[in-house]
Amino acid sequence: MSADAALIAAERVSQVYAGRDGTPNWALRDVSLRIGRGEFVCLIGPSGCGKTTLLHLIAGFVRPTSGTVSFAGAPITGPGPERVVVFQDYALFAWMTARQNVEFGLRTRGVPRAERRRQALRALERVGLPHAADRYPHELSGGMRQRVAVARALVVEPEVLLMDEPFAAVDAMTRQTLQEDLLRLWQETGVSVVFVTHNVDEAAFLAQRVVVMGAHPGTLRTDLAIDAPHPRERGSARFAELYAEIAGALAGHHGRRAA
Amino acid sequence: MSLVSSETTDHRASRSAPAPADSFEATFRAAHRRRLRRAAGWRIALNIAGLVLFVIAWELIPRYSTWINEVLFPPPSQVFATFVPLLLSGQILDDIRVSLVRAASGFGVALGLGIGAGVLTARLAWLQYLLEPLLHGFRSIPAIALIPLCILWFGIGEVSKTALIAWGAFFPLWITTFIGVRDVNPIYLRSAACLGAGRLTTLFLVVLPAALPFILTGIRQALSVSLVVLVAAEMSGASSGIAHMMSEGHQLFRVDIMFIGLAVLGAVGFLVDRAFVAIARRLFPWYQITS
Ligand SMILES: Nc1ncnc2c1ncn2[C@@H]1O[C@H](COP(=O)(O)OP(=O)(O)O)[C@@H](O)[C@H]1O
Ligand SMILES: [Mg+2]
Image (cartoon, rainbow over all chains, first blue to last red):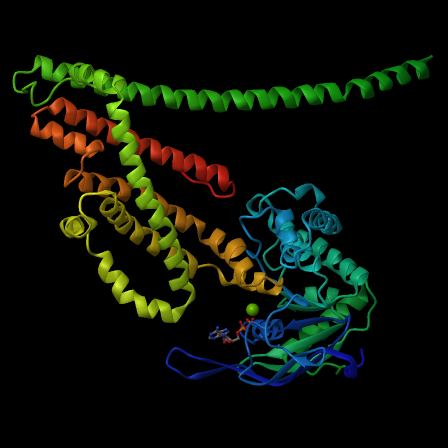
């Protein structure tokens, strides 16, 4: 991806939270990052290194203490449907069925009922859940809930999906199918994906580019380009190499820098 | 030969396969429904048995004991004998209607004001800080303590009763709505904002439903408070209503009439609560209310 056509650009962003006794806690310090249209980027790093903070800055939930975050050339001033977040869990509206959850983003724009319904059912089909349309979230498994969350996000046709450890709470087998389905949807829609994880295997399987972060203060340490085609075979030697490269960068060795 | 026969068996199998599956499902469903019905029937039977046992004990104890004065503690047969003419003349139904209208109007006013105030104070910090000393101070004044003042200001008419009931029912509604709205999971609000929801959409489709378990608790409390304040207000000055009927019974030294009033209040309170649970279940199928 060419850096000039950046969809998301963070320029020297710092985010400082006040500790309980007022001491500044640098969640992010001087972070600069550019993400292009259609890219699939994984943010990886130890707990507390500011992954969620960075994602929330892009989402527009918080303003940076200093620096700027812009989207398509304009500074981000708040949340919007061109940047939809998929949370780890418990983000589906418990009082709406799967279909009503997916319809929510269409309802906010006043799409007529019949059209809304048609699009929601189609989105549920794309994530493999047409049969669960009328079930409430508590009647769905963790994996199914995350599928509905992805359908709910995609139905508003965002330009970027911001995913915060979305598959961390599901079992390993389900996680793999969710990852495969996410790759398929990414390829079909051309949406950009910023995917937070602390799981090396997940980053090696999904990412075109892995941004490795370090904690205290939160900084970007390494930016790895992963030039292996999808789908990737978990048992292959190439995959083992990718895994080792990311794990090495996480452990603090220097990886290959992205072009 | 063998080929033909195997073909026919296959054919028969595939054709008859759906039938047993269907009938299994049908019998399973029917059995499930039967089980549920039986459990519900058993519960109702025991409910009724409890009532009947209570009435029998009440009838027998005053009759066969020496230490209970039947004038002060009339048995159900006597209460019932008084009740029938009151029912047939329509007098008691009038009193029930008058009382219910009072309770409903006071509760209705409180419902709007309490939920409105709860939402606003939970969403606007400055309003919360401005109003919290007042609201918490007023909340500690029992509505009953205001009755003399209310009668002084508004007389013994409907206004003073509606105001008193609304006062009593307002606070549980306000405080539960406030807590429910304040504690809405921020992930819900952020999801809504991401998906392009404005303030009103967020309020009606996200905040209020998310706070609903709290609001329903407040509604239930407010319903019972409404009945308490209703009785207190009617007893201190009214010319109609259930509690007014009871105070008349008191003045006439008619304990049986007072008992009728108690039974009616118990039944009304019980039915109102049942109706609340039934309506809430119907309207909010995702939220499991225990009865
Ligand atoms: N709302 C907040 N208030 C105070 N401190 C916060 C807040 N959010 C995050 N932090 C702090 O910022 C740092 C980074 O947090 P976070 O972005 O959640 O990290 P990660 O997602 O990588 O685990 C942590 O030290 C965390 O305690
Ligand atoms: Mg996090």
